[in-house]
Image 1 (cartoon, helix red, strand yellow):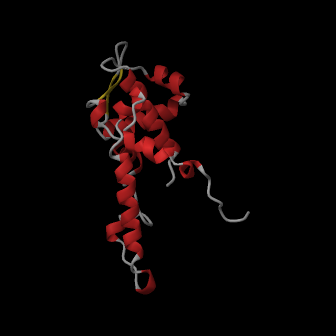
Image 2: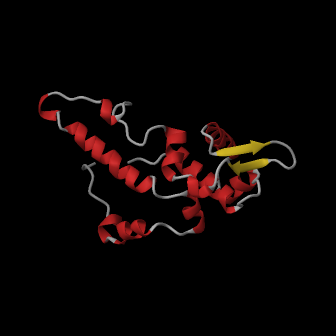
Length: 156
């Protein structure tokens, strides 16, 4: 799975806002804290606002706030807000893809992949990340040394 810069920035923006709890956070504060270029922060925050994850207010008392509690916003919500579905095949949802002949069962692999992506991303909230208190299953998954090992890619 490829995690785009937009997704990475969006999660980090929400983490800075969550850390402030009920106070609104100015764009320049988020930008400085997370080393996010201001223009990128502005466009990413606009996507988060359209998705109903943040609210914003202009002016001297303005800034960004979470639109709902951080415990109710998952990493999956953020990815869907800025990138769309968690898993797609050639731009289609896995359940809409059909293959003939020998490839017929491939759709099941794509569906299983989506299930596993959801199993992690829908169970990790912005509140947990901001507090540094990840669910136990994340620790279990990452405690396996194989989780950290790079797999050989194609020869260059």
